Structures are given as C-alpha cells and as structure tokens.
Length: 175
Image (cartoon, rainbow, N blue to C red; front, side, top):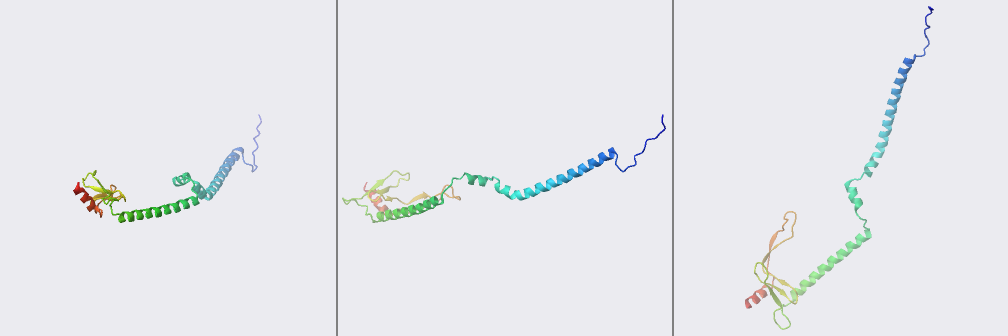
C-alpha cells in the first residue's frame, strides 16, 4: 500500500457539483429573462392590437346591422318622394270628398231624399247614408280614439251629430 495522498486540485476551475449549481442558476436567470421579454412583447402587441380587436368584435348591434339587407340610397329617396306624393294625393282626395259631400243637397233626381236609413246599431239610434255622395250621417255618439302608451284601450270621446242628422230624424218619423 502506498502512503501517497491524493493531490488536491488547486485550480480555479469549479468542481462538477459547483458547475452544475451555477448552470442551474444561469438557466433560471435566462428563463426569467426570456419570460419577461415574452410577456413584454405580448403586452406590446396586444396594446397595439387591442383597439383593432375591439373594433372587430362581433357585438349584437353589429350582428343586427350586418343582417340588414342593403338598401340603395336612390331607392330610399324614391320611396320617400313617392310616399310624400301619395300623402298629398290622399289629402287632396279627402278635401274633394268633403267638398262634394258639403255641396250635396241629399235629394235624388225625383226630388225625394237620397238618404237611406240604417238601423243595425247596438244603441238603436238611426243613422243615414246618402246614396249620391256616400256621406255617413250619424247621431251624437261615443267613439274610442286610437290607443297610446298611457291609454292602451284608447280614449273615449263624444262626437257631435252630423250637421244633416235632422234629415235622418225626419225620415225616421215618417216610417
């Protein structure tokens, strides 16, 4: 047996155990730096893409807007113009009918009344219809107006009798 002692390594090179520990610490540092760099890069990309992604997001409003059919502005303008003309024509027709009914004497060519009596109403009051001008001659009666948000069943109001209702009353008294 030899009594020789092992030589000590006096170099500055680290031992394999120390080298492994330093490598693990360096790897952890590199991982941390890479993770921080990736996090910063992703945050930068999303900060720039965020508004773009928000504008591209499908919201219910955008979905409803996308499902609407395309309407040509020229078609919309034409429809609006035609609707205004139609309303003017209706107003003119209403005015002419009112003038014709106001000018009607409610007497036929033989000199007799052209008003025909109508009795099929629940209040049992007679009404009349002129055979020449088609005027509806009604008594004083209740009517129900158009519904609105406050009155869903409409608002009842009293309508004064037609100005020629006395003709209906005269015809009724003759029967």
